[in-house]
Amino acid sequence: MGTAWLLLGELRSFVGVILPCATVPIPLVLSCELSGVGFLKIITMNIDRTEFITWMKRIMQRFDLVDELLKGRNTRLETVDGEELLDNQDLLLMLKISPRSLQRYRSEGKLPHYSISGKIYYKRSDVEQVIRQSYSRSVSERKNKKEK
Image (cartoon, rainbow, N blue to C red; front, side, top):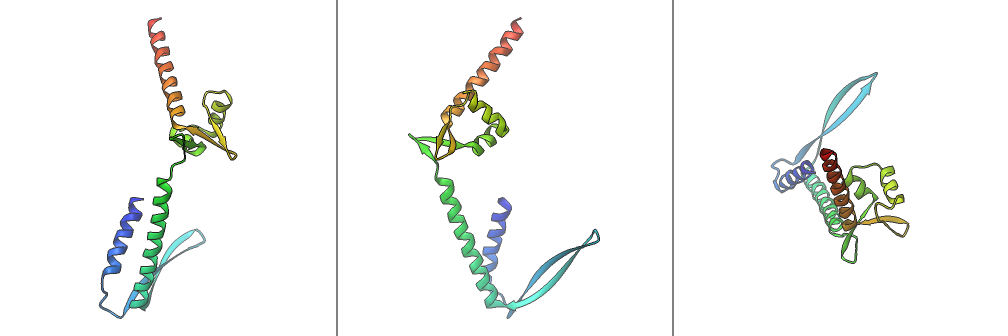
């Protein structure tokens, strides 16, 4: 994501520059593969400066729109009773487990879950509690093994 925003910043500064010539050379990169041997061909196309600036402004408007949509999505957290809800994907990434392991935890009753409109959610506090219990159990098991 850092590279994309760096490019976006460079693009913004480039659009603000007043270009001295009437046309702007736009390089088009074409890549072709012929019988396993790849080659790259670069073609330069000249377009009118005002048309180029118009295109760039439209691109920047689209970037701004996408940025606003992403900001709105990130700030909207699904909550119940003030607690954040996590879905399956969030939990898989957080715990670094397989979907089958998560299903097993649910079916064995180890992990409380809630079904809302056919989608399964987990309260963050419940997940953290299960992690703490699992950690304390493994630590006590190690202590018991050392004592024996």
